[in-house]
Amino acid sequence: MVALEGSVSHVMMVNEKAAFGDEALPPYSVHDSVDAQHVARDPTWKRWLRKRFWIPTSVLVLLVVFGAIFGTVMGVKASKSSSHSYSPTPPAYSASTTYGWYPYPSPSSSTSPDSSILQPQKVPRDISLAAVSPDNLLFWDLREGSTLWKKEGSAGSWSIASDRKFLVAPVSILTGASSHIAVSVDASSGHIVYQFFREGKWDDWQRLEFDTRFERRPAVVSRVEGGVDVAGVTAAGHVWLISYDGSQWSEWTDLGHDITSEVSATSWGPDRLDVFGKRGKTVMHRSWTAASGWTQDWEDLGNPWESYYTDNDLSSAPLAVSWQEEGAQTGVLDVFMTRQGSEHKTLRNNQWSDWTTMYASHEGYEFPDTQSLVKGDGVDGRPFAHLVSRGTSNCIHYNVHNGTNWGFWDYLWCYEGSRTTDYPTQFMPTYLVNAGDGKVELVARDSEDNYIKLRIPGDGKEDLEWPGPKDLWENLGQPA
Image (cartoon, rainbow, N blue to C red; front, side):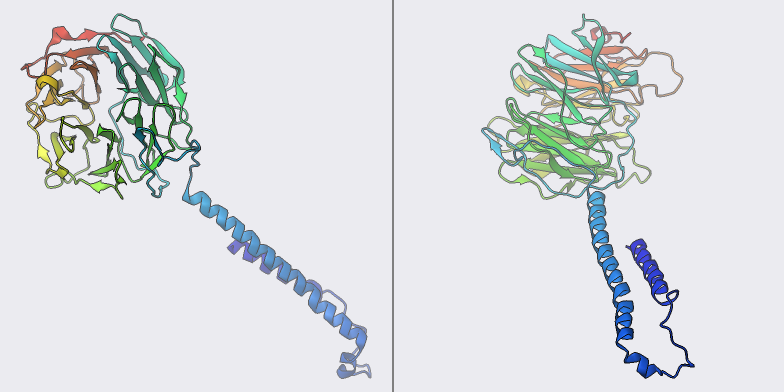
């Protein structure tokens, strides 16, 4: 409006000059015998005087009105464009609607910031696998150029999985007795992409249209048969969630902003969903129940290391797992983090414990974001959760939750190659998946950048000493 007002003032000055400066005055002189009073009473002079006054005045009024209307319109447009930079295009049905047996999480309002606030993530999310069954495994390896490679079974050969470019290796979960879903992020558009495994085969990759870019690996859970919940975070730290009921996708649900890490999600049953992330150094939590919907805002679970670490934040993104024992009214939820040491916090009987330090895996510390956590079945004494982590020993360590607490760490694999640095495994990822029937599959990379796989033996109760069960690992090579 400042520029507009300046233009109007300039027009006023120009019109004043035109009307009163350059225009010739009526033909009379101070030496004429006709005085000023006589001139004022002349009808011709009166008409000329009225024209000289009303014409420029009318022009000025029109200019002011036009300027006010133009400024208002432009101000509204500017306000809209600055408050929201996205334009979601969801299906024409509400996320709060309940479709049969699958209750969708209902929308939760918040305001999205414009700036990028995500903390750097140095450990790549470039390996993963899908376990259709213990004997039907699909391995993914994301390589240079955002190209995703796949290998069907240990005896298969590596081939390009799709012409699409991927930001992260897919996250795959079981959605039914014989159905799976794999979810990733398109590297070009930043959109969520997915493919189903149904009737014995994988479908083509499909994209969820939404006018925003996701920048981290999505969290994917299934609360009921055929159902899926997918949560992702944008560069601005804004968290969005979308649900699938077995036949159609819901609208996107807005979970809020200011989350600075990858998000984690877990569910202990059809009526419960929990989402975790970091806000700076603090762990944040938001939950949904069928009875109450989403909690009003993110819950602050604190900083596990607040009392004794004050330097730059080096903690991992939170990982979470939950389960509900048969006959129990509520479930158990455990959230885990590393920052040199390992800490966890448990929700039991709807009450949070304090942050608790776990046993050390070795004489050293853990590398943040090298961890992988997966739910167990807890059947016949088997673990309720499985956890792996890399540390300064340059080994992969393994721990299990027995339903009451975490145990001691075991060795699964140790780096034995040549070194150009003290910690060559510091930024090497791991990936766990529950393959069913109590079997858990682990994939990682070795010192030669080969893709390696281990079926974790037994029920997690064996004492596995250094350097781990080397003879049980399979070397799957690497894409050509």
